[in-house]
Length: 231
Image (tube, rainbow, N blue to C red; front, side):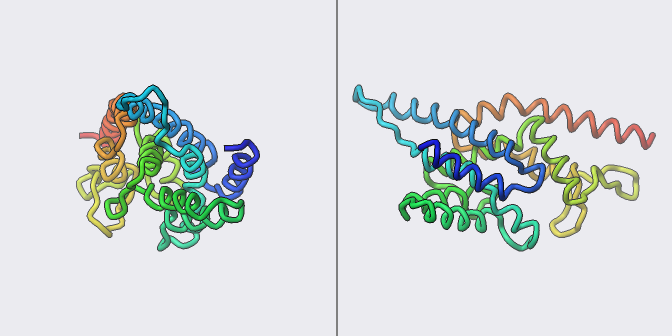
């Protein structure tokens, strides 16, 4: 990708990023992780070929644009929570890239990557670029950085650190639609379960290294709060 094109996409991204849990630094970390994963995936691919020629199987331009633009729909979702930022953002990205004279095929590829990057089961990523974006974005939910970003986001949407039940025990799981959203319920719903969802070997390895730190933080925080309420 030409520097001028990267700069234009970057400028559009920074214009759209608003909340501190999904700021430009989150985007840059996702991009750096994606490029790291891509290097491993390309090495794995080329090492299986009976040829002396390196043939990249990953479209780095598509991957880079998808990483930079993957969260530009967040503002629309905040304004209207019924919207999905992945769907809104994918259309915004497509329209922007077409305005930059990208071919419809390439712009659609970026759109498809963004539309499937969200953590859910009904729209899994299919292309290698989409899987790498998914993994790079989900690494942001692992380890201590996942804890920190979740705490920030919970504050933005005014969810408490914890909620107690009638017996002064922390509610750690919530039934769908019951409204008991807190850091502890989010951890048990999403953060704890993210480690088995990665597509690439590289992302799995990085996540595994980070996992214990998150577990230790959660357990110690739970203990400190529980002790505060006494026996």
